[in-house]
Image (cartoon, rainbow, N blue to C red; front, side, top):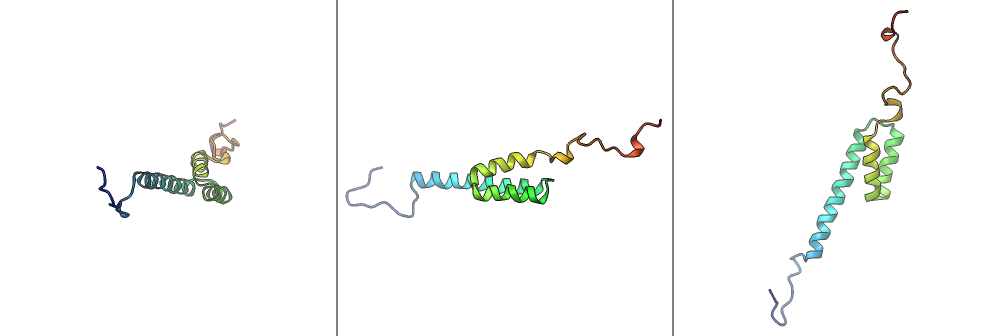
Length: 94
């Protein structure tokens, strides 16, 4: 639709670029919120959580992706077989 000569565009109606910017902004906000939730639910130490959250704040998109990846990994001290400290009751009788 072409505008008639002298007609102005309505400033209340977003243009295509503004709509796309809003969608991208909402996706980034969702990524950051998801990363923060994943970090807070993880079983990492408080210092590791603080570092991941700081990464999310300082470098929003890349930091959030790294925080999501790091939060999904188990901490080293909780990996299966990481110290092989079994209770005495589970050892075979000698």
